[in-house]
Length: 457
Ligand code: GDP
Picture (cartoon, protein in one colour):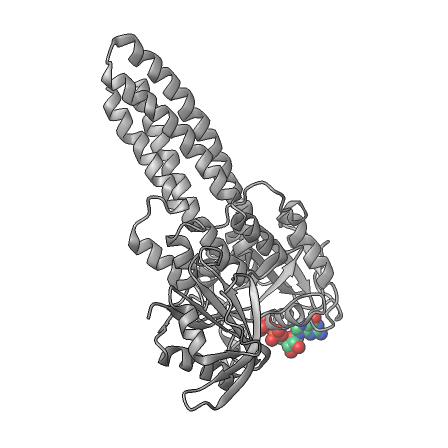
């Protein structure tokens, strides 16, 4: 039998569970375990749904289900497919999955349905990656960027650039066949123009990645300050604050729990600066200048928190000096107590960073902190429209390499290199860009990408 099967709904209890099966023999397998209420033996039509019962080998009824039929090529994978909608209990879905396996289906690998859709040319690689992003999206903006990519706007842009290059490559071939001097000169001139056009488009895509990275990876924020300044209190205030969405999600690739808040649709990830959250008895442990430096290096934003009820310590001053080139917000905490220092205090005044007065304990001033973060990163300006948003690190690397190749080609033209040398570097650009859409990508990379999918997708 040729068919793969998997449970497509998440593990656990739910209203409905979906078992998905794809492959040439899907319908044969379904026929063995499913008895539709309406037993008319008409030809299976695509996009139809049948109500009936699933039976095991001994004829024991397992569940009442609805089966959706997709007839090749009009299905997600382009193969014959069925989706069994059963009751959403873990035992029921597992039992139906087992029945499919016992009747000859093979267990699908993670992402295998999408991989088949890609290999059969229904979607390209960038679109497949958009599906993972869509499933893993943490914010509406990320979801919006994924649907745009799934709709093909990145792929269309890349294909447009590749077609421009290919068209000119045809011209080169002609000039190699007839290597008269002037034809070569004209060709080189036109090639240069084309390469410049390509370069502008690639630069725009690369610039776009800054926005895409913010949407996808968000801002990494570290809270630094001397012991007892109020780091954990601030963290708790942020994560428990009503407006903030606290989501713990299990990455499909890395099994880590990340906590983040969302400000203007952008995820703000809180870096757990060792010990803030798992503070045990090492209260006395100093943050230390070296450690502060290391933490700050990995953060896009440092919240430097000071206990305003005390005088500023030398260590504060030193750490702040060290952070002078970083994006830093100074939080003057414990405003509910009598304050020793304020924004007017000379040594605070001369720190050239935005300052927020706050009481972590009373959760007072958090909104102001959000507003400052939003202004600092101009979060309000990050909007998703129909233009291409590059959110994927892999795509960005490819775009960068392609840009380098284009520059090399332009240099070769300017240095009057022979046309066949120029041709080689232009071909490299074409190959490079093809890795985004998957036209020229190696099997290893394809496997790597689909491994990140969840089972049943
Ligand atoms: P950390 O060592 O920097 O993580 O500091 P903590 O968050 O553990 O706070 C140290 C102490 O200061 C705790 O007893 C907190 O309750 C207290 N604290 C933190 N923020 C405030 C605040 O805004 N006002 C007052 N009155 N106390 C605070």
